[in-house]
Length: 175
Ligand code: ZN
Image 1 (tube, helix red, strand yellow):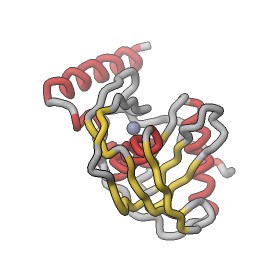
Image 2 (cartoon, protein in one colour):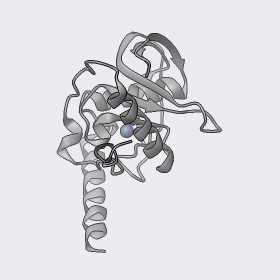
Image 3 (cartoon, rainbow, N blue to C red):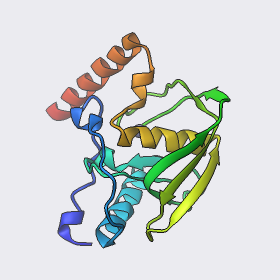
């Protein structure tokens, strides 16, 4: 991995405005994309996350990685993901986000979904997901649209989270 690929060990923190960038489709799944995916998987594991969207590492292309397995040995790469179907049945869930450290909350989401995406070899695949995997995919796909999960919360809660995180970021900068 070349030096230009080693710059992405920092994850953007809410309310960084760059988190609201809408990502562009990946034009070609090549070595650059595979290196980015590998780098993001490493960052995700290092940060003890179960999912990471390229948006969060300030790369605005439609790519996300996740691993909801207990052993953290089943990484998945979804490139240009498209939602094909979502169940009417919804569940309320508690979500966390590497860009919103220490906050666990959330709204309702469809309990199962069907998604089509390219894998890291550029092959098209369909993923039927339910439960935590479905929630994770929807959460990460939101990032690619410039949306952070706190936007599902009430404005009051969101403002409290914003204030808390900005204060934490100021304190971190002072240290
Ligand atoms: Zn997130």
